[in-house]
Amino acid sequence: MANEKFSSQLLSRAVDEFGKLPGIGHKTALRLVLHLLRQDEEHVNGFADAITHLRKDVKYCKVCHNISDTEICSICGNPRRDASTVCVVENIQDVMAIENTQSYRGLYHVLGGVISPMDGVGPADLEIASLVERVHAGDIQEVILALSPTMEGDTTNFFIFRKLADANVTISVIARGIAQNDELQYTDEVTLGRSIINRTPFKS
Amino acid sequence: MANEKFSSQLLSRAVDEFGKLPGIGHKTALRLVLHLLRQDEEHVNGFADAITHLRKDVKYCKVCHNISDTEICSICGNPRRDASTVCVVENIQDVMAIENTQSYRGLYHVLGGVISPMDGVGPADLEIASLVERVHAGDIQEVILALSPTMEGDTTNFFIFRKLADANVTISVIARGIAQNDELQYTDEVTLGRSIINRTPFKS
Image (cartoon, rainbow over all chains, first blue to last red; front, side, top):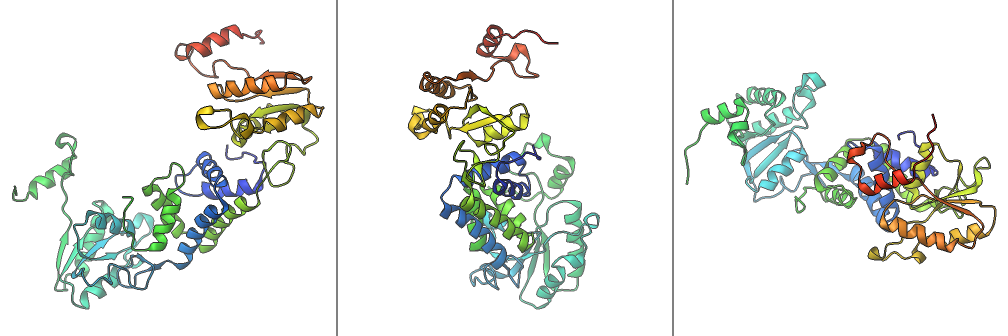
């Protein structure tokens, strides 16, 4: 199918462009392009404009490196957020995920990845130096490490922990244990073992 | 998730636009937009340009109504195609599907749909009049009906058959029967019954 001959080069080009997106195969790309073809020209221009505009004008917050329309993002710039707590996350999707819980009122620090020698990502490629600087500048009392519970996440946690050893801050890590609605018998041993060791007082 | 607050309106808008595409949910839209954000600005502009350009400049062949960059499509304009045979299909995807078989050297006629009273699609909404006109203009010796074997497809076939009753052309319909590699025992009764009735001489 990939070498399919289209009777329109314009169509062929648009399908090729869509097909470059992750998880979008040739057939899906064709379906999406034909859908756009059936829309008003105004609608299609709006679609294209939203993308070019985003790529051209998007900024990353100077403080936390979260995606933003302004120099300082709306979270860092919000005086009602708790500026004494910083939650360290891997990427902007994680910021969104935590914001969606509505359980956190502090600020963030987006690393832009985790340390992964296999992928050639070292500490210098991440926003770790800026985190250390931010912590040393004062004000911050607690750093919450909220990276994924993988080997790379754990390595990065440990690296940050060491870098902040001489700073006067509490360093915590998000709780690991069995997830809501998970079945105990199907939970892996590491998770289950940890959740027993790190048991918390029962609250009714 | 749909009411998720983004820290960037630009991001929010781009995700909304992607989310309007069929089969693309909010999470996929976000993933695609974040992928585009990581690409070069040139690449992103190329993507947007391919879409606006397609919508603005695409044409439909004046003869067969297939998608085309020119007034007459590359199939109708090809002198090496058999202009005496016209294959009637529902949409441009069907043209591509038949072209991919490399088993057909005639021309096409794209109806733009099938008669479907439930969806408010009547004969006047389709390119049936132009087909009749095309057949009456001469040259065409055979009309192959290649619509989907559904109630709507059959209705449309019958309607076209009646409209062309007084024209001096052979009207055929693509073969229906069990598909290659299908298992006989799992084939539905209608298909299997038809495939026995419409058996063809064995060719080794």
